[in-house]
Image (tube, rainbow, N blue to C red; front, side, top):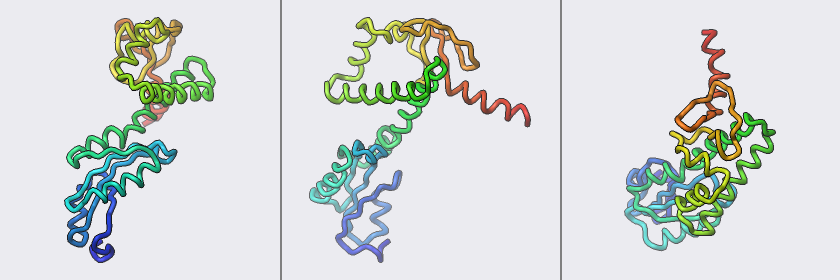
Length: 212
Protein backbone atom coordinates (compact mmCIF):
# COMPACT_ATOMS: atom_id res chain seq x y z
CA UNK A 1 0.00 0.00 0.00
CA UNK A 2 2.96 2.31 0.46
CA UNK A 3 3.01 3.46 -3.15
CA UNK A 4 -0.78 3.92 -3.36
CA UNK A 5 -1.31 6.25 -0.39
CA UNK A 6 -0.21 9.87 -0.34
CA UNK A 7 1.70 10.98 2.79
CA UNK A 8 -0.65 12.53 5.35
CA UNK A 9 -3.72 10.61 4.19
CA UNK A 10 -5.94 9.48 7.04
CA UNK A 11 -6.34 5.70 6.83
CA UNK A 12 -9.27 4.02 8.57
CA UNK A 13 -8.78 0.30 9.12
CA UNK A 14 -11.74 -2.02 9.67
CA UNK A 15 -9.57 -5.13 9.56
CA UNK A 16 -10.46 -7.26 12.59
CA UNK A 17 -7.46 -8.48 14.55
CA UNK A 18 -4.94 -6.39 12.59
CA UNK A 19 -3.10 -3.85 14.80
CA UNK A 20 -2.38 -0.32 13.63
CA UNK A 21 1.36 -1.03 13.72
CA UNK A 22 0.92 -3.67 11.01
CA UNK A 23 -0.91 -1.19 8.80
CA UNK A 24 1.48 1.67 9.54
CA UNK A 25 4.50 -0.39 8.50
CA UNK A 26 2.99 -0.70 5.03
CA UNK A 27 2.22 2.98 4.57
CA UNK A 28 4.33 6.11 4.09
CA UNK A 29 6.07 7.19 7.30
CA UNK A 30 3.88 9.26 9.57
CA UNK A 31 0.57 8.16 8.05
CA UNK A 32 -2.25 8.47 10.62
CA UNK A 33 -4.20 5.23 11.07
CA UNK A 34 -7.41 4.79 13.05
CA UNK A 35 -8.52 1.26 13.82
CA UNK A 36 -12.29 0.74 13.87
CA UNK A 37 -14.48 -2.15 14.92
CA UNK A 38 -18.03 -1.50 13.67
CA UNK A 39 -20.96 -3.89 13.61
CA UNK A 40 -23.71 -4.81 11.19
CA UNK A 41 -26.57 -2.77 12.75
CA UNK A 42 -24.85 0.19 11.08
CA UNK A 43 -26.85 -0.97 8.05
CA UNK A 44 -29.97 0.43 9.79
CA UNK A 45 -28.21 3.41 11.45
CA UNK A 46 -28.00 1.66 14.83
CA UNK A 47 -24.38 0.62 14.71
CA UNK A 48 -21.91 0.47 17.57
CA UNK A 49 -18.29 1.24 16.73
CA UNK A 50 -15.12 1.48 18.78
CA UNK A 51 -12.10 3.39 17.50
CA UNK A 52 -8.44 3.39 18.51
CA UNK A 53 -5.69 5.75 17.35
CA UNK A 54 -2.45 4.66 15.78
CA UNK A 55 0.95 6.16 16.57
CA UNK A 56 0.56 9.18 14.29
CA UNK A 57 -3.04 10.19 15.03
CA UNK A 58 -4.02 13.63 16.27
CA UNK A 59 -7.27 14.60 17.97
CA UNK A 60 -8.56 15.97 14.68
CA UNK A 61 -8.17 12.58 13.04
CA UNK A 62 -10.22 10.87 15.74
CA UNK A 63 -12.92 13.52 15.54
CA UNK A 64 -13.12 13.08 11.78
CA UNK A 65 -13.63 9.32 12.10
CA UNK A 66 -16.15 9.77 14.93
CA UNK A 67 -18.16 12.20 12.79
CA UNK A 68 -18.24 9.69 9.95
CA UNK A 69 -19.34 6.80 12.14
CA UNK A 70 -22.00 8.75 14.06
CA UNK A 71 -23.95 8.94 10.82
CA UNK A 72 -24.73 5.23 11.25
CA UNK A 73 -24.82 4.80 15.04
CA UNK A 74 -22.74 5.37 18.14
CA UNK A 75 -18.99 5.57 18.69
CA UNK A 76 -16.66 5.08 21.65
CA UNK A 77 -12.91 5.42 21.96
CA UNK A 78 -10.92 2.57 23.46
CA UNK A 79 -7.21 1.81 23.83
CA UNK A 80 -6.17 -0.50 21.04
CA UNK A 81 -5.39 -3.30 23.52
CA UNK A 82 -9.16 -3.57 24.08
CA UNK A 83 -10.11 -3.98 20.43
CA UNK A 84 -10.23 -7.78 20.64
CA UNK A 85 -12.71 -7.50 23.51
CA UNK A 86 -14.76 -5.03 21.47
CA UNK A 87 -14.79 -7.50 18.60
CA UNK A 88 -16.17 -10.16 20.92
CA UNK A 89 -18.83 -7.92 22.50
CA UNK A 90 -20.23 -5.52 19.93
CA UNK A 91 -18.55 -6.73 16.76
CA UNK A 92 -19.81 -10.30 17.13
CA UNK A 93 -22.65 -9.43 19.50
CA UNK A 94 -25.36 -9.21 16.84
CA UNK A 95 -24.67 -12.82 15.87
CA UNK A 96 -25.12 -13.93 19.49
CA UNK A 97 -28.42 -12.06 19.73
CA UNK A 98 -29.61 -13.46 16.40
CA UNK A 99 -28.82 -16.91 17.81
CA UNK A 100 -31.02 -16.25 20.85
CA UNK A 101 -33.75 -14.84 18.61
CA UNK A 102 -33.62 -17.93 16.43
CA UNK A 103 -33.98 -20.18 19.48
CA UNK A 104 -36.93 -18.15 20.83
CA UNK A 105 -38.73 -18.24 17.49
CA UNK A 106 -38.23 -21.99 17.18
CA UNK A 107 -39.50 -22.42 20.74
CA UNK A 108 -42.61 -20.42 19.87
CA UNK A 109 -43.23 -22.63 16.85
CA UNK A 110 -42.82 -25.74 19.02
CA UNK A 111 -45.39 -24.28 21.41
CA UNK A 112 -47.86 -23.95 18.56
CA UNK A 113 -47.45 -20.35 17.43
CA UNK A 114 -47.38 -19.49 13.73
CA UNK A 115 -43.81 -18.67 12.72
CA UNK A 116 -44.72 -15.13 11.68
CA UNK A 117 -46.30 -14.50 15.10
CA UNK A 118 -43.38 -16.03 17.00
CA UNK A 119 -41.02 -13.85 14.96
CA UNK A 120 -42.92 -10.65 15.64
CA UNK A 121 -43.18 -11.42 19.35
CA UNK A 122 -39.49 -12.19 19.64
CA UNK A 123 -38.11 -9.33 17.57
CA UNK A 124 -40.28 -6.68 19.22
CA UNK A 125 -39.39 -8.06 22.64
CA UNK A 126 -35.70 -7.68 21.81
CA UNK A 127 -36.20 -4.14 20.48
CA UNK A 128 -38.34 -3.12 23.44
CA UNK A 129 -35.97 -4.56 26.02
CA UNK A 130 -33.02 -2.74 24.47
CA UNK A 131 -34.97 0.52 24.36
CA UNK A 132 -35.94 0.11 28.01
CA UNK A 133 -32.30 -0.27 29.02
CA UNK A 134 -31.21 2.73 26.96
CA UNK A 135 -34.01 5.16 27.81
CA UNK A 136 -34.52 4.36 31.48
CA UNK A 137 -30.83 4.09 32.26
CA UNK A 138 -31.64 1.24 34.63
CA UNK A 139 -28.92 -1.36 35.15
CA UNK A 140 -29.73 -4.54 33.23
CA UNK A 141 -29.71 -6.57 36.44
CA UNK A 142 -32.25 -4.26 38.05
CA UNK A 143 -34.49 -4.54 35.00
CA UNK A 144 -34.30 -8.31 35.17
CA UNK A 145 -34.99 -8.38 38.89
CA UNK A 146 -38.13 -6.27 38.42
CA UNK A 147 -39.48 -8.97 36.13
CA UNK A 148 -38.57 -11.71 38.59
CA UNK A 149 -40.08 -10.11 41.67
CA UNK A 150 -43.02 -8.11 40.37
CA UNK A 151 -45.47 -10.93 39.78
CA UNK A 152 -44.81 -11.06 36.05
CA UNK A 153 -45.41 -14.22 34.07
CA UNK A 154 -41.70 -14.82 33.54
CA UNK A 155 -40.89 -14.61 37.21
CA UNK A 156 -42.17 -17.95 38.39
CA UNK A 157 -40.11 -19.99 36.02
CA UNK A 158 -37.03 -17.81 36.14
CA UNK A 159 -36.99 -17.81 39.95
CA UNK A 160 -37.02 -21.59 40.05
CA UNK A 161 -33.57 -21.91 38.60
CA UNK A 162 -31.48 -20.07 36.05
CA UNK A 163 -30.85 -22.35 33.05
CA UNK A 164 -27.34 -23.40 32.12
CA UNK A 165 -27.02 -21.60 28.79
CA UNK A 166 -29.05 -19.31 26.61
CA UNK A 167 -31.06 -21.84 24.63
CA UNK A 168 -34.22 -23.18 26.15
CA UNK A 169 -37.68 -22.36 27.37
CA UNK A 170 -38.76 -22.82 30.99
CA UNK A 171 -41.90 -24.84 31.57
CA UNK A 172 -43.98 -25.29 34.66
CA UNK A 173 -44.68 -21.60 35.41
CA UNK A 174 -45.25 -18.34 33.61
CA UNK A 175 -48.11 -19.67 31.49
CA UNK A 176 -45.91 -22.46 30.09
CA UNK A 177 -47.25 -25.29 32.18
CA UNK A 178 -48.04 -27.62 29.28
CA UNK A 179 -45.38 -30.34 29.19
CA UNK A 180 -43.81 -31.02 25.83
CA UNK A 181 -42.46 -34.30 24.55
CA UNK A 182 -39.67 -33.90 22.06
CA UNK A 183 -36.05 -35.03 21.58
CA UNK A 184 -34.75 -31.74 22.97
CA UNK A 185 -36.55 -31.93 26.29
CA UNK A 186 -34.25 -32.03 29.30
CA UNK A 187 -35.06 -32.03 32.99
CA UNK A 188 -32.97 -29.70 35.18
CA UNK A 189 -34.27 -29.69 38.73
CA UNK A 190 -37.35 -27.46 38.65
CA UNK A 191 -36.88 -26.77 34.93
CA UNK A 192 -38.17 -28.65 31.95
CA UNK A 193 -36.18 -27.07 29.15
CA UNK A 194 -37.02 -27.50 25.50
CA UNK A 195 -34.00 -26.81 23.36
CA UNK A 196 -35.43 -26.14 19.88
CA UNK A 197 -32.05 -25.85 18.22
CA UNK A 198 -31.09 -29.25 19.60
CA UNK A 199 -34.35 -30.67 18.31
CA UNK A 200 -33.71 -29.26 14.88
CA UNK A 201 -30.12 -30.53 14.89
CA UNK A 202 -31.24 -34.02 15.86
CA UNK A 203 -33.96 -34.10 13.22
CA UNK A 204 -31.55 -32.93 10.55
CA UNK A 205 -28.37 -34.76 11.51
CA UNK A 206 -29.47 -38.11 12.89
CA UNK A 207 -31.02 -39.50 9.67
CA UNK A 208 -27.89 -38.47 7.79
CA UNK A 209 -25.55 -40.05 10.28
CA UNK A 210 -27.65 -43.19 10.52
CA UNK A 211 -27.18 -43.70 6.80
CA UNK A 212 -23.37 -43.40 6.90
